[in-house]
Length: 169
Image 1 (tube, rainbow, N blue to C red):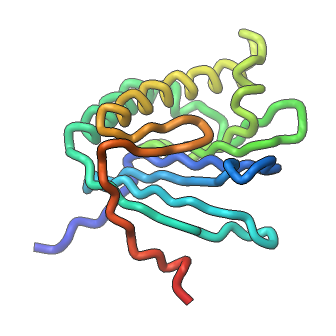
Image 2: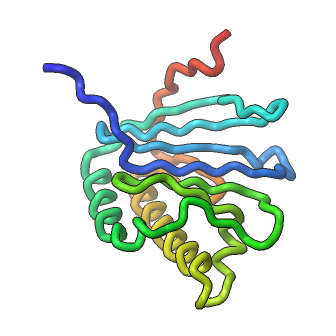
Image 3: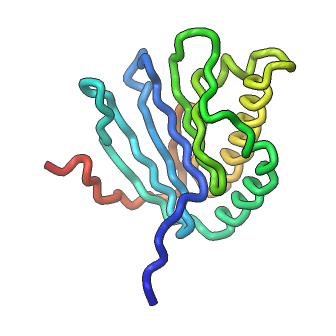
């Protein structure tokens, strides 16, 4: 029997456009259909993002199945989120979201967009995405993965360091 190819169920990335401290680190997570959560951390160097570390967590299928139900429930409005949303000012951070069955989209300065008026479609979609991400973060927290808009950490779960092709010479 051939090995099952991994497909993305959920992915999220945060990239500070103007990092102000060493804690402003770009990262990306990707949960695939084999229940593997890949966490990658990046640093900017000469206009290029270099992967500095990468970890894989083996999660249980219950988390993925529950997440799929959450995504399916949100699908009617997720399909209408614009591919790119930005506030009125120069962006300070980029948030990229990917959900199974929906083309990935980017939101620049999520907190600014959430504060827009109720009649703003950018504000409306930003608030909906933020609420969905809160629910996803709560789900991940039940497995020891603490996700915030600008960071990720883990407690009580041991990652397996992934082979990191970006760090190899």
